[in-house]
Amino acid sequence: MPQFETLQDAANANTPEGLDYYWANVDHDAYFNAARMNQYLEVIEYVAHIYKCVPPNGLKVLDAGCGPGYFLQQFSGVFPRSTLMGIDYAVSAIEHAAKIVPDAR
Image (cartoon, one colour):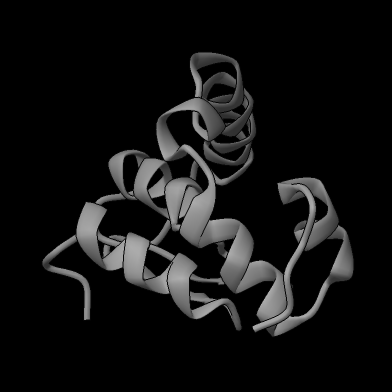
């Protein structure tokens, strides 16, 4: 795996190796701080407002480039009956997502 001087260098490389390095070494608690969570919730609440006529079985959502899955985790709280899928080519991000959402498949 290539060496990166900083996590920003790894993220900026925009390669599977760079993103794996980034997600394997980032402090996930610092990454997902309250301000970032509020941004996610604002987007989700806006979507919820627009889609007042959500079908009873929910929505089908694909988050391409989901990282560790924080957005989908919050989205599931607003639309609990929805079918959600996150994909990312950073293996370590998906591994972290599996830890925070253990019942995901």
